Length: 76
Image (cartoon, rainbow, N blue to C red; front, side, top):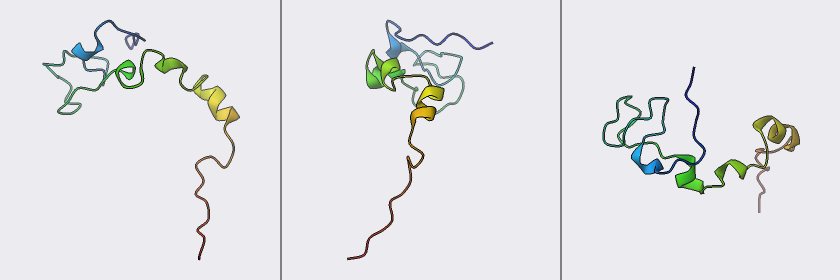
């Protein structure tokens, strides 16, 4: 069973958030890279969970069908 992911930990800079080990930033055990993985609150602020406005299923249902489509190239 995976550990519960904290939404706003008091000191996110002290841990690596790349896997369920939550290693100290000075002792990375999983080999997830040479640097620690930051917590989402460090990247996008404390309201990071409200950024997308809903659950992934809700967002996928409301996304337009051509989202991510590349527009056709125009010639001059």
